[in-house]
Length: 117
Length: 311
Image (cartoon, rainbow over all chains, first blue to last red; front, top):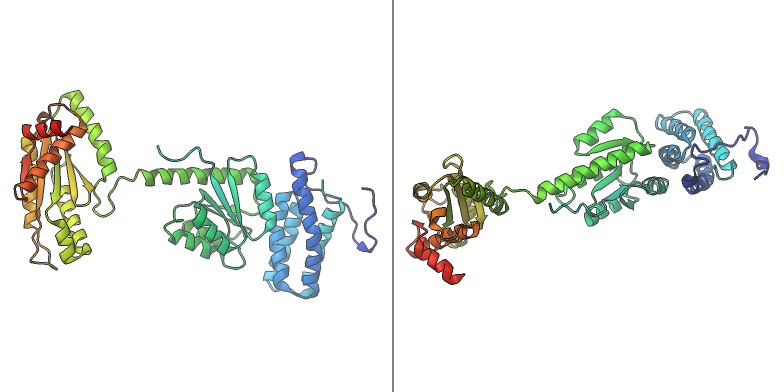
């Protein structure tokens, strides 16, 4: 797909983030599934952030942390781990905001690479 | 060996994330495993009890109930107690790992997992599970008395019989039965009956070294005496008889328990086999009962004739 990134994606560059398993035939279906899930989660995370629902934010971060690397996205796991850690440490809203944006940014890059594979 | 090695080992994964279940199903596809998924602690416990899988992969960070609580429940339920649990955690906290292992977990894997490592750890857990099952199946100790059980007796007698035959050695058997044991149970209660069984077992255990006392079933016991002719076995049996009739119990000082004994050795048999040896001792025991109990009888030719007639 040669489509341009969505117009409202704003400031950070949308270099597609590929799964480490991109190109492995037996992993393609799995990676596609995960990228689809990430798409849903981005919205969910954004909503939780808007509502300042730290518990839901923490649940998302925790689940993504545990799974992403398994699907070939270790950067997303690391980013989610940092967000989870800050949530547990009652960090300031500004710090959290940075973490949430970083995680969403990575997730968008993964989803923008069509199916990650 | 009765362990069902042909059966595909079953893995129960307890994790609140569908992302993990999909990943596991796909990444473990090549393994000889049947994978079952539970999303909550409650579902995990229910499935563990219903399935009795060979290995459980447990996310320790479950939301509805702490994964440690699930682990504790699995380990306190005798049904699930022996199932190896590999617990999975995204936390790198060593304290949590130590705690999980000390609570009886078999192993730990960090999440996100390395697939090759995860597979190896699962294989290791399945091996342990099969070994535990094998041990349980072949457990040869009688739970109440601590003596060898019937299964062990059958196997050991065949072994001793083979050796005695090969090296032309003596081999004796003492079969014994507590007298009026049912009445004792009825009058004084089963806990006391169990106490008497345990004490009688203790007496049989304190006999000559090398003799092999076993619980044959119920209130019946059997002692294998390798390298021992019948006349020596008679002396041993009479010592047991004396010991049990002298036994007194504080809580029931009026109770006297006695036992009857049947002794046989290979020379009592016209046709040598383990079955005939047990039968001969059994016939002699029957005679001891008939003649008034609290005595030792030796298998003789008339027993043999009985054997032949009844055969």
